[in-house]
Length: 475
Ligand SMILES: [Zn+2]
Ligand SMILES: [Zn+2]
Image (tube, rainbow, N blue to C red; front, side, top):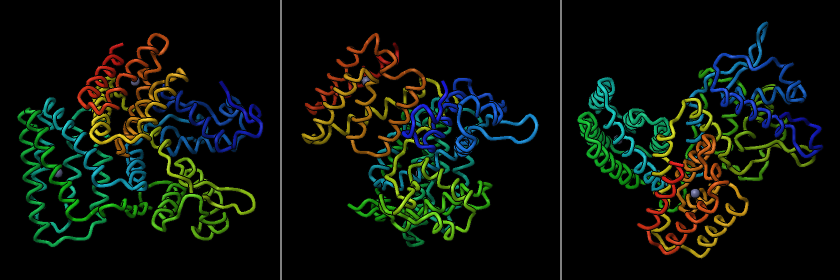
């Protein structure tokens, strides 16, 4: 299939067209199992294939380069070369997104308490000589650093547990939540040195206890100790008033590092994004005209336009042409970040089992939250609507699940469930995949879950959700 500007006259903006071309190339790379180093075609080949102008194709390539999925190699034998994506990009993007929408410490805590004990248990079950060395090295260093004056976030330790779980998805999610915790701690007022030292000693001791359970291969103990430790961490964060009680918090993003080797356009995009956040620009407001921005950021028009393309890609801001135009602030939308994460995990080669474990844990936690409280009539009707919609459209049924997560009200888990859902769809594991065979079964299962949720029967709702997910996984 090719796309051309002429197919849908006037209705497809050039930006969108470039994004479609980029998406098709990404799909092709995934379908071909990431042939790193292979040339997908020269600029002329690709232009002919997609029937788009040179400028549209270049925009598409810039998006692929931004995602680090492919890059243009100049010169003889050149062309669009498949590259290995970098994990730090999608993680950083998700951390900034969650920070931007203002996730509470309570929600962060619940997400951590769901994912990290699970990671610790898996780490204990698969522990090896080299992971023992790595864990001991980290806790030894922590004990040695107790005299440091900084507030230790313990990010390295927790991220290491995520890594040692052997589950790439759990590892990524752990890095996102620990990364977010670190950002929150960085913004907190400094606490008295004596108290900080005591807290660091306590944390280092807790980490040692967890490590001993992991090394002993005692999954249950590792899981319990991480849970206990995180309860303390979250209680401590709340007591430090790192999070104002009602108001959702917003923190200052770190300035992009000009020495990071990022392209200038990426750096400028990061700077504009920071300014939008810290100057508290609201959705719909106009940051400035193109000439204002050229003056403000002191870059060439070409670089600025490239930066704006990245910002539009992440749904941060978009240039509106014409009178009264300028750079308009957009509502935050994680779609591009979800896609980036899914792309990276596809590259890493996530097993269906690994995906299932994480997806199930999040889905059950969302059912738990939803049934634990009183359901408002509005929530109930939204759930019924989602059920009807997924059935009517004969489509995935995934909508029912994402709506449960959304209504459960934890933005982190809702975002993570959207990622696992996207990954399941990619693996052909969505409810849709067997809708021809079992559309009515899926509908029945959803209805039964809904009945239990509406009745506030937590145990039954969890049981039905678990059975439904297991049925899907074994089909
Ligand atoms: Zn810790
Ligand atoms: Zn379903």
